[in-house]
Amino acid sequence: MIKKEYSSYRDPSGFVYREDGVILRQVNKIYLDKFEHMHSSGLYEKLVADDMIVKHVKVKEEADYTIIKPDRVPFISYPYEWSFSQLKDAAITTLNLHKQAMSFGMLMKDASAFNIQFINNKPILIDTLSFDFYNEGEPWVAYGQFCSHFLAPLFLMAEVDIRMSQMLRMNIDGVPIDLASKLLRKNRKFAIKQHIHWHAKSVTKHATAGKTAKGEPIKSIKISKFNHIATINSLIKIISKLKLKQVSTEWMDYYQNTNYTDKAFGNKSYIVTEYMKKVKPEIIWDLGANNGTFSRLALETGVKSVIAFDIDPLAVESNYLIAKKHSESILPLLLDLTNPSPALGFNNTERLPIGDRSKPDCILALALIHHLCISKNIPFDMVAESFASQSDKLIIEFIPKEDSQVEVLLATRDDIFDHYNQDEFEKAFSRYYDILEAGKIDDSDRTLFLMKRRANIET
Amino acid sequence: MYLDPNFGSMIIQLIIGVIAAAGAYLMIARQQVMAVLFKKKLNQDKIAKNSCEVKHD
Image 1 (cartoon, rainbow over the protein chains, first blue to last red):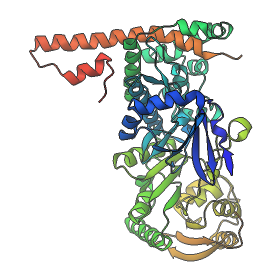
Image 2: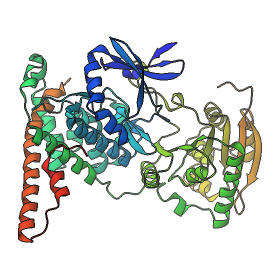
Image 3: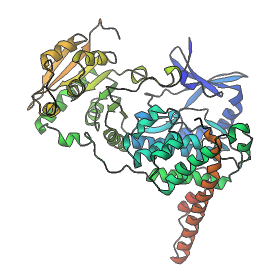
Image 4: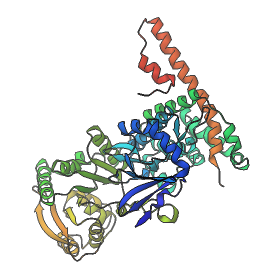
């Protein structure tokens, strides 16, 4: 049965669909000449060799269309889930793809951040139909989109606040340039002046010109190839130099400021390792992963891939930089479990919620339950139900009220959590899971549980 | 207010392109002057990087 992906309705060049669970892409007749040029010119081969585009094989060639089967991307993530450096790397990859395309007589007609995905922490283009012919003198048609999807959010994250990445969740077509200009109005850095303030003024001034003249004036704009590439090189330089202002967040030094003794930390690592060896998962979700300490431990036990979620953008940033440096199969992503990425876009079907994209073999929820139940007032059974809807195996740590970290959470508020104790925790989770093992962590009051979803629980 | 951003984005590229190109020319010139002054061998890689020529790697 053929099911068209809602996210690919915009481009008349083709569309993505699923047939019996296999992801395929149809290349329509209007794009076939470009598609053939991409192959015959050597561009596709070059991009594959450089790990810049997802590989595909042709599965059907007809006069009016071609069907290709792209390699499957392990986990689809969205720009509002990326850290600062992930967005930076995706931006630089987009610019390099455009430059590379120009050397083969083509250019990138799209610069959507949603066209980039991370495979082993390397940004890669997944939209094979993003290329068009380059005609000498032509400006970059996707420049405005590039600024909205990458440059404006990066400037906002670097110059205003790292949490500005969430603007991309509200604006899935990119941060409007005039809005970015207002938010950065006090900033007079030359790069921001050019690409944001002047750009915004130009957009406002010429708002109707492009429409009323039905595109004719656009064709009359000429920019030499030298100037075109100089602009791209300049953008690469600007983005490469962008740095976050030195800020600290609650979690970034978590493992330095934790209340674990060396003995407790060692024993916790040992128990987690033993549970992992028993479950033998291939893909895990590490919820509240912080800088990925236990994600890395999971990889050592034979786990193939970890999606490491955390609420803290700097923790995700730190995890990404470590994972990238060591080429680890960890994909760090920003996620607030109490307000996770929702369904977005037209008909709420273009961008999927986290849980609809894939499921893990096991969830790792260490030092997390007290934040959900005490900081956010979520009852145990709702947490258990949520975890059970995602995975049938769960490794979870219970932190009692006597723990100093919980005491900190309760220090400034009334203790209304009469039911927050290990008995109630086990009772609530037992409605959804069979508790296979429980291990008290030495030198602490904490307990680690290995659970398996009950057979009668529907997901 | 709906703004069709593309025309304005195209126009601004003309200005940004000139500034970027001027920067690239200056960089190349600076390297050539430095090479003459200090009789250093030109760093061909750096010049190529700034020259804005599109080459296959």
